[in-house]
Picture 1: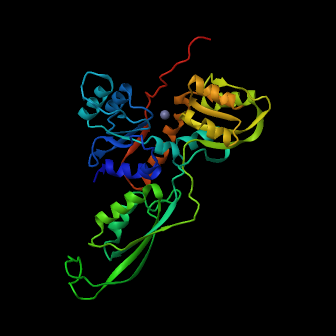
Picture 2 (picture 1 turned 45 degrees about the vertical axis):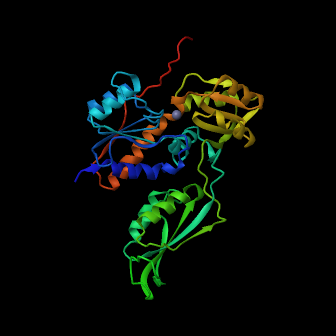
Picture 3 (picture 1 turned 180 degrees about the vertical axis):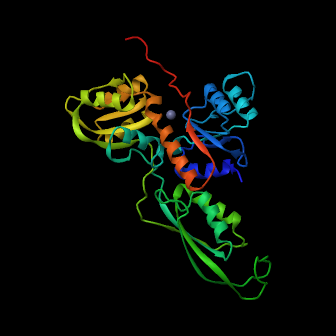
Length: 374
Ligand SMILES: [Zn+2]
């Protein structure tokens, strides 16, 4: 039996849980359908015209990209204008597109982790994380034989994610009792008679940002008219997921040396640098892509240098005024390493699952900027 987009999406969502995406973002399956069949997955940063032609030429039936192929609200779907023409091409060639953006930035082993690793940072932690996140324990009582369906629905909505593990639950068998009263329409039993039912007590953990979705998903598949469930706030520390990273260089170095190292590590010949560090550098904050929103956080976290993909003039100025050096190394250069990483992780996961899916990095990816002059 062939493999489907749904199976690929499931693996991707374990790598980059969709609940990590920023609210303004647009992630997930943006073109194609879950039932579409998949044999060749092409991974890239952006879905450009060259990328779509490469996918067609190589017979790829699914593209996984970092930047969303649809971001702004579509007001038309013409076949003769820029981005919309791409969507036409994709649809006409039955190519599905799945996008993991800010969720992939934040995820463990995602874009920001890969950048920090590339620079050899140690003791790496997220620079900013969602302050709203608290952990809850959700306990639900389920009649036997329905526990898998309820667990699956809750897990898909974000319950039971601990570190890199999904579907973390604890289940214990027991007996539930109830008496349906007048006006009820019980799934099991009769009005006015005490019932004893074999039930499973399922417990799992949920982040506050996912709580509502998890409860809704649970109620949707639970067979009971009145579902018994409990929500307990926990004092456990939440494993931080967030944008940007802060870490230490393995040894102190001069700012000149650090700049040279960044060029080498990222394979770029030039950087935009604002401010300067006269002494030695050791604490570095990073954010792949556009990281201006994290400048203050980087400074308050003790970073001497803030390295990101791109910065506006006044943002770079603000960083330098804080006494921090700011480096813009290029949006593409700070993100591109995630592509090979994703190819490896996906291929490994598909092989382990015995899926007959080939994963490869797009060859036609290119930075939109070229440096000229000099
Ligand atoms: Zn980006």
